[in-house]
Length: 233
Length: 303
Image (cartoon, rainbow over all chains, first blue to last red; front, side, top):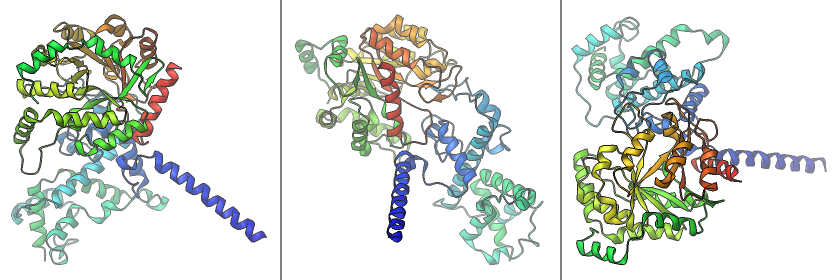
């Protein structure tokens, strides 16, 4: 008898949970927002971007809709560091414009909310640029000399062709090499919230720098650096 | 589909119903989204997850019914094919659309109208943006398409200069032309303030205002005062909420737009002004659910 009651209890609980899930499925806009991301901080940033209407004009993944600015290729977004340019622009809006609808001002948002918008813009931009650089139909043939010059200027403060990257051209080839340098694995790793790893400045800085580079590589840069890295046998 | 001179004369002889009569018909016809004397409809731009194209038109109709809407402002892109494709330049695609527009048979639009009729949905207005790129022939066939679809008017986002050019067109097709405001106060050509509407409306008696409460509020306009003074020239309101001073869009009731007051003005004065729900505030809910909440807000305002 006890077992029967237990079974009924389990069944009742399962029914309630299934009902709760179906309600959330019915009301959450998966069609527009997509499936939740594994990184909950990023997921919150994405939802904030939707919640304040940014996604309806700029596109959830920054594929712009209508007359809104193309954030994927905007120079200002590319130069922004932690919202130093985006934050004041969001607060003030762009009232002077030749467009039908000026960019609204978001002066009533909290710093946390603006921070979430900035986070999503940079994340979505780097993801979009990565896609553009790796899915190009006719990839350019890189110039290793120009790639070395780029590497010396932008990468050499942290990496070395004879140190951590020695033999990288042997380890990877072609598209895999390009992918590995454009988006090192650390970029996709969610941030750890363990107290002993919370303030790992090296990883945080490395991720920020790689993401900033990814947001700004031109197709030529990407091909040239790949060509240079391929010489590191 | 082009209206010939003979067709035009036939129309004149049979009598083109006046705009006010056409609008008044809406009031006399029971419609599923006529609520306590206010006719509601939807600007289906609200279904943000649904690309506005021919392929999604059946889904649009399904959602409108699901949301209890009996009236819609139909954007031309739900009816017109798209010609942009890989390898086709924007200029080429535009030219192909132009050619399609002037050659599309009337039957094409009649069939679309039947789809909406079958679902009990009236197409109140046809939304199409007109610019300097549009030829006169293209404008004529587009407005005629609106007429065939059963629309009382054609609405679009353009400024005073284009509106001035459009003066002779609506009368040829027996419909009105709706002037729709945005909130760009830096553009002297834009519809953005009461003064700009007054100027545009003075161009032709066939012009009507499509007052967008969100943008008018963001441009620090007075929606209630505007309706009080110009209700006879207002065909519809795009009903949504926004904050003043070029502020952001908000859920209904959280911004500065006087939504409840506007609805009660329309109801208490029996004005034949259609309230077209529209939202641009973000939501994590499905669009159908969000429209349902907005509509509930309005129904409570009129209870």
